[in-house]
Length: 230
Ligand SMILES: Nc1ccn([C@@H]2O[C@H](COP(=O)(O)OP(=O)(O)OP(=O)(O)O)[C@@H](O)[C@H]2O)c(=O)n1
Ligand SMILES: C[C@](O)(CO)[C@H](O)COP(=O)(O)O
Image (tube, rainbow, N blue to C red):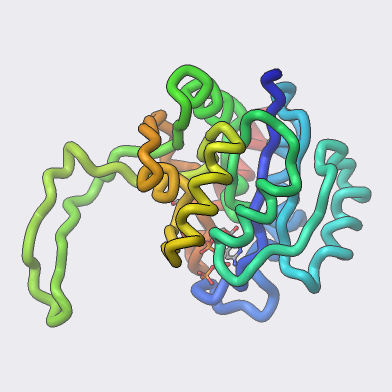
């Protein structure tokens, strides 16, 4: 029993993007960002099913995307919650698989081979996330704008998705966090606080999360470049 499910979370409002339309529905090279993301997992042989978590008002339009773009592995389109963590939990509960990859709908540049290496990392060690070493010097700055410390860059990684776990273990970590009112910005945080050793698998700098307007040009350029290479 090694079934793999993918939770793609896309129920956010995209406030930092500042567009009327939520960022996951903006088009890159003529196709919604979310569709670019889903196509990657739809192509992956190891993936058994995908659950897509979206805003309650967007379920219908996403069901249309699933049909129109032939996203045959997307078995469920469901409504998410007010925080990313709540949306992920809804997705986990809709699956029935042993393993799960949790991925942001707004990371359309994920490469199949990196997602697969993340999964293999988790299958070997229990839990794994894609990440890249931080290139800048990072400072801890206090509330009045003064630097207090400079952490050693050697130990700093920028964490991405997908993040891979045993599904039931991640659900238990979510339930524990929810019971204590803890909100994390990624799933690894919840697994870490539940005592799971989460391993880092080196990913790729191009797996950006589309967050602010300048990310759109960069993503369109990268998608175009990949298309030209295929
Ligand atoms: N309640 C939420 C919040 C976020 N997400 C999803 O989590 C991913 C990463 O979140 P982020 O980039 O922060 O997206 P938003 O919350 O939409 O952006 P912002 O914080 O700027 O409003 C996105 O695919 C987003 O749609 C979600 O499914 N449910
Ligand atoms: C999960 C994540 O994409 C890892 O980098 C990130 O933590 C999401 O954070 P956000 O606060 O929702 O942007």
